[in-house]
Amino acid sequence: MKTFLRVLMILAAFACVMGLAYLVVNLNSSSNPTTASAFENRSVEFAQNGTRPEFDREGAGGGGAWIFGLIKNIVVVAVIVVSIVLPKNLLLSRRREVHAGVR
Image (cartoon, rainbow, N blue to C red):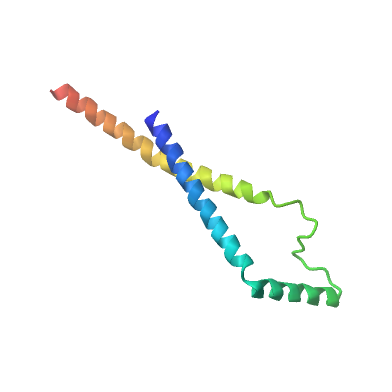
């Protein structure tokens, strides 16, 4: 049970760090007006040209796709943590059994 609580604490810390990183990236990109105007100018060129841009995101399904990436990343980190912590705990418990048997 201690291992499970440790994994949950690590995942919670990971989620907090990733949330902060997400906020920093979004705040940084939204405060920079030059990138938005450069993109808008490019889309105006497409509209004047009469062709449809290949990566038109207007009317797309939504912004919920990022959550699947977030869940995937958390699962990958959880698998890595468990693959490290579980063998370590098994090794420590075997060492305790060996030392208890010697005494």
